[in-house]
Amino acid sequence: MTVPTLAPEGHLLIVGAGLAGYHTARGVRAHGHTGPITIIGEEHRAAYDRPALSKAYLTGAAAEEDLLLDDPEDPLDVTWVSGVGVVGLRAEPLGVHTDDGAFHTADAVVITTGASALSLPSLDSSEDRGGCAPARPYVLRNMEDALALRDTPLHGADVVVVGGGFLALESAATCVARGAGSVTVAAGEEDPGARRLGSPVARAIRSAHEARGIRFAPGARAQGLRRRPPSDGGPHYEVLLGDGGVLPADIVICAIGAEPRTEWLLDSFVRLCTQSGAVLCDDTGATSVPGVYAAGDCAQWASHSSGLRPVGHWQEAFEEAAVVAAALTGSDPVPLQEPYFWSDQFDLRIQGVGRIHLADDVTVVDGTSDGGDLLVHYSRDGVNVGILGINRLRDVTRWRRGSRIRPASAEAPGPTPVSA
Ligand SMILES: Cc1cc2nc3c(=O)[nH]c(=O)nc-3n(C[C@H](O)[C@H](O)[C@H](O)COP(=O)(O)OP(=O)(O)OC[C@H]3O[C@@H](n4cnc5c(N)ncnc54)[C@H](O)[C@@H]3O)c2cc1C
Image (tube, rainbow, N blue to C red; front, side, top):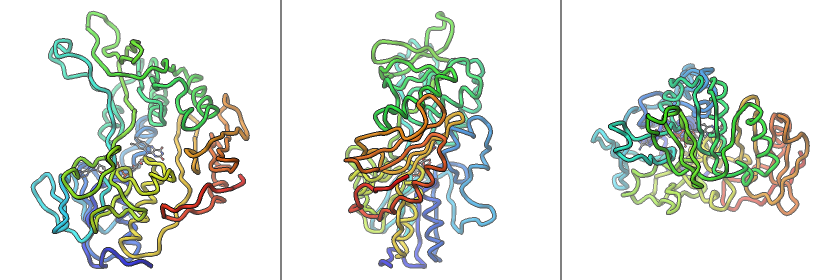
């Protein structure tokens, strides 16, 4: 047990009604907190989980209610304040200002405001637009974004997806499933994912997409988007590439990354990372302001900078929420699992576990890069540090079970020797 930050009857205020916010509240209640909990979220809807937004929700296979985080059979005992944005944090007295002019006091505040999608700039001048709004790509960060794309007819459309990460590739796969006429991925690199995951994995993913008709544009980065003159006929937009190339498109989807939603903290005493803008925290989620914690995609914990944790994955947000809940209530520290992520593209389930980003070598253990089945091991200095499987559920699960639990501290041990 550690010293609790929050008295059992104290008021906990959570900013951001997403994954980390929801699970912080659930964790705090599970540790016996009896005081009031308020969750303030800017979205006008019940808290939901995001991964399906680029997968089953986009194809129509999942409905909004399938994504809801709260369990109607066992609802969280909290006060939800929805459709209200938080615009500032005050340390003394501790609390937050909201965009409806209110000030909400609290005994502890947890910041879980996630991230916002980066987008491509519009390159058309006001004359080119002829009174139309600037060309804007679709992005995928929240339910509104996904709804806009889901409600857009794709049948026969020429789609360009900008970005080479999982979100981009998942979006490309769903466009094919929805009958797009052509789908081109402008990844900004020749072999999307090769630097992060190694060539065998990048090749396997690319060949699965190409086998379904998806085209990969040359490696030049996209610079922006503009409308095409109506006199040219054909698609309404074009994506301009850094090498001067142009990709015509009826629909442009941009998945080039995200930035932490911390703009509302700029005038506070909460320290932010000068590069990413994320809230800097220790490995219990504590920020530079006493009584204020942060978790999830908006936060950078000490172990992130030491390379032990990836940012922007579901498991990290979920586990950080559990650590913050334990720290707030003075409960036993939570042991964290090795980092884990997954992605679903067509019939491929891609799962990575361990410290893949630290690896200096990738070995194919089984399967091939041109089938829907691959198992690779990552090692550093000859020690196995991670594994990635494509349709290898059992191998990945076994590795996860066997891998050593890491402590919630920046002095985490080095790579984990595990045999799969
Ligand atoms: C489309 C999509 C697909 C994904 N798929 C996968 C996947 O397959 N595998 C995987 O491992 N991870 C995936 N992820 C990542 C995972 O969903 C995120 O890491 C996780 O949602 C982060 O949780 P969070 O609580 O930090 O942020 P969020 O879930 O983004 O929640 C933050 C909430 O705070 C609100 N907010 C922001 N600013 C304010 C403010 N000032 N006032 C009030 N409210 C505010 C936001 O509107 C939002 O509701 C995906 C993410 C997206 C967007």
